[in-house]
Image (cartoon, rainbow, N blue to C red):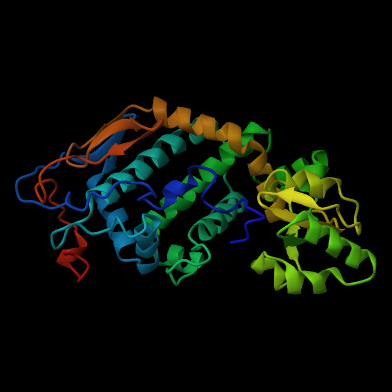
Length: 367
């Protein structure tokens, strides 16, 4: 991943991280498996403001992930191999994985009710944007051992669970757009562009990343002397992902670049080389070659980004205010590090939850 830029459609600066239900940093609970003969189910996995998240809905979500090799790889690699999808006994799921999946379904229900209460329209444009974001969320980072694409991961999920994930993303986006008084429709996005030209104009940006200010000044002098920016970038830039393209980062929104680079690029006149810019432990030379108007997808990202921070607080408040009860077989609804989620139960190994839909009964995934 290019360390100079973060992209709005990646799941890692907001709650979208929850799309992979087993997070980095979650403790290993491999001994707590969903499978035993003496536990009993309630008629539901959870209730959210009186509405049920059924056992079959949770079972379908667990089965969907377990049957999707790409998603399973993402889940298991997110914890550095410490957490798995399956439990300790054949035909069981890991309890932490199941608790996180149920947390996501509870969150989705609570947020969808709020979106309905606000009467936010979510048409084809919004749903298409959400699906595109999900594909990006599921794309493994550079260097990952998961050999798949985000599109392949999403396509391999069963229809019901895939739809639930895309709907949750669309709901979150709709709330973010609402914060800035916009809607995610062609007309709503175009109206936002008309009134926010600076935020929806792209900067076609190039960069050379160097180890020292002295190096940066030397190469700046060479560029002023007529040496091509791209030639220097290919041979000398430390950012490998852009060096191979002559330093080209892409035509990006001001918000795409990590602070403070976005402000530096936005103020840089077209065609002018920047002075050396200190960034983390590196020094950068930057230039902008043109500034086109953002197409629909990127303009929509600008709308969502503008409301993202405020919407995240709203989303947290919505989930926190929901009246939630959880089948104790899956755990308890609790506030953990400031976030409400299902906390997996503690108990003896293989003595928690019989799961009639456990994949091990149908395949070689269990045990």
